[in-house]
Length: 191
Ligand SMILES: [Zn+2]
Image 1 (cartoon, rainbow, N blue to C red):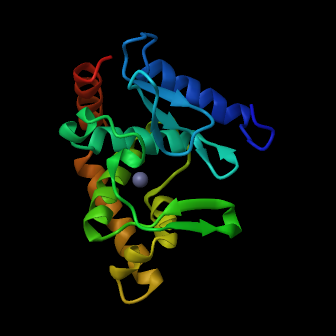
Image 2: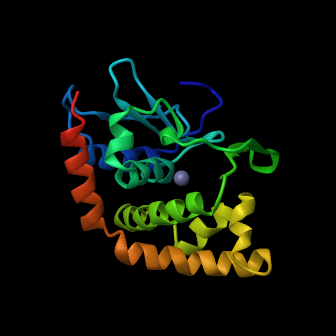
Image 3: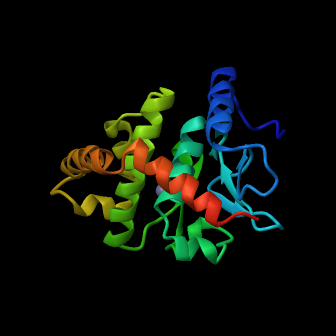
């Protein structure tokens, strides 16, 4: 493992629990966990690799976010086996030196609306595994995405609106719905 990467024992144990619950040990299963990856990629056989990394740290919450993207992305788009970023075209890559983290700027409000649905699943999964994320902490991740700041008259007002929207999304994008989408998609996309 890369010496720059940090994985705490507790995060490792949570990732193992997630693996046991959602990643059966079956070579035809189309989704795999990647500790050293940030975001989504595809392996040579067409398996979706879901990353646990963001900046220098490996955290269960990053994996849960990518799992949420898998459950939210349209089946037709997944069938095309996107090689990265879930097949989305993003704007410029934004470097955030303060947190040694980089991420793609979203290109419009539609992407933000999609991300809010993803955060709905993410929040429910975060509660299941008690990784400490809240609607407020997830909303805080949007601080770096300029378009999120269109929601209110100030950054603070926008983040308050987004936090509320994430709570609303979590009531619709429930754990039960996540599991329905997860298992039907992984069945449909088998290698
Ligand atoms: Zn996302």
